Image (cartoon, rainbow, N blue to C red; front, side, top):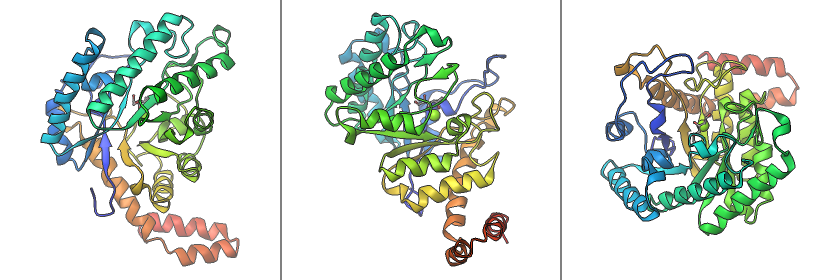
Amino acid sequence: MDKYGYRFSFGPWNIHKGADPFGPEVRPGMSFAQKLLLYKELGFDAVQFHDDDAVPDLDDLTPEQIRERARLVRRQLEDHGLFAEFVAPRLWEHPMTIDGAFTANDPKARAYAIERSKRAVDIAQELECDLIVLWLAREGTYMREAKNVGAATHQLLEAINTLLAYDPTIRIAIEPKPNEPMDLAYIPTMGHALALGFQSADPRRVGVLMESAHSILAGLDPADEIGFAMAFGKLWSVHLNDQNGLKFDQDRSFGSVDLRRAFNQVRVLDENRYWEVGVVGLDVKAIRTQPAELATKHLRNSLHMFLRLVALSRSLDRAAVAQLIAARDYEELDWLILSHLMGS
Ligand code: GLO
Ligand code: MG
């Protein structure tokens, strides 16, 4: 925990080997145990998990074996003074998820997705964490005519309700994203995710995770997406990062593309006391050119950027801002903010 009370997290996938769709890995891998050693050193408190980050090859194991292995991971976390922030079922790599998971056209594939998600809940229970994240990676279409959007929406709702019933204490945070890997995803924005949650069997237990790059890809402002969700008390996690325009999902270091956009995300989080409700997750990736031994600087940079922006948000001259708002002098407000970000 930092001096402001924020706690920070990232997932094991955020230290990665640099492969992209056009080229192979460029850095040697690191074991989960090696990565765990880096968390505290880099200033982090918590680990975000895919189900198979915690229990590799879980499709080949029985539910009891999965629980046993998850218990070992909990001990590993304890040994490092870390905790699990969330578990996310990875519903986008298995052959059964080629056509989607909860919205696949094949009922057997949909059944697989539900069973796999229940195992993710089992893992969360063993890791003593009550948050499941659903990034609905392949719920959508490449070919609009291949699925029925209304039916798909109800399938998603049914899946959420099934998980809520499976564990009466679990909370679910939906992570919206408008595209990639799909051409068009079914839950592209905060509004879609929140609507689904409010329509669920237990709306109190369904919230959202806002990822900066995903909001930008949807043509939206991440700070406004944060504020919208927080207005309903529904922002339970974030994936802060950055994104240079409408192209592939870049997961750039937080603030590295648009400093003012990053400032406003931090400002809205801080003004709404996010440190009391959630962990600051940084879903960032080192660019491909980064040498292996230097491939954690994106995490360090993102965390330090967050803290420096908290300091800037808190040192903003609020009285001056209020005066400029009252005078409707937004050009002077613009200058005040820019000057503040530039340190004068
Ligand atoms: C990809 C997503 C992905 C999720 C992660 C947790 O675009 O951001 O990294 O955040 O799988 O659900
Ligand atoms: Mg993410």
